[in-house]
Length: 157
Image 1: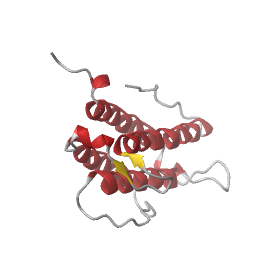
Image 2 (image 1 turned 60 degrees about the vertical axis):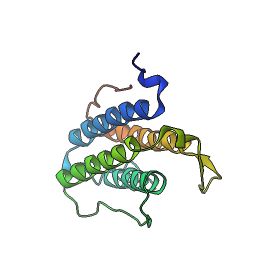
Image 3 (image 1 turned 120 degrees about the vertical axis):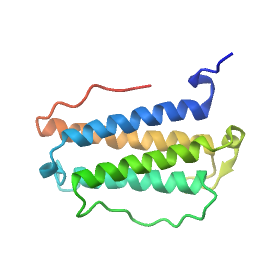
Image 4 (image 1 turned 90 degrees about the horizontal axis):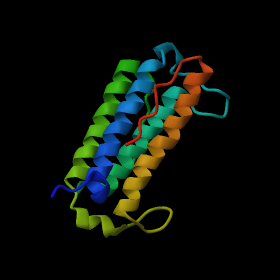
């Protein structure tokens, strides 16, 4: 009997993670490079900064909680990157985290890890990884709309 993705947390995450990556890729492709520094208001992050923030969170959470290597957190910026380089880096980061999660023992998802908001299970960290991308991708969709660019159709599971 084959297990459905909804019954297996890691395979469910991987399926959603791939769809999330592809959806974000469509959004990044739609925004013209000349608009990567667009921000709707002064206090918001630019399109480029949103992508840096998404990337930084992916790299931090994925490597801290799903890799055996010591991870030293540092600010990651796409300042000076071309649109093509940003897209390549985001794809690379998504793929790296996918491999780390695929190599995670499903039983370890119950294990608690130290987190600034208090102890969380590794399963909660997986959910946070996806929720954070979704939150900031939603902001990027607004940026597209504010520039009269039709966002791609929603991609869920």
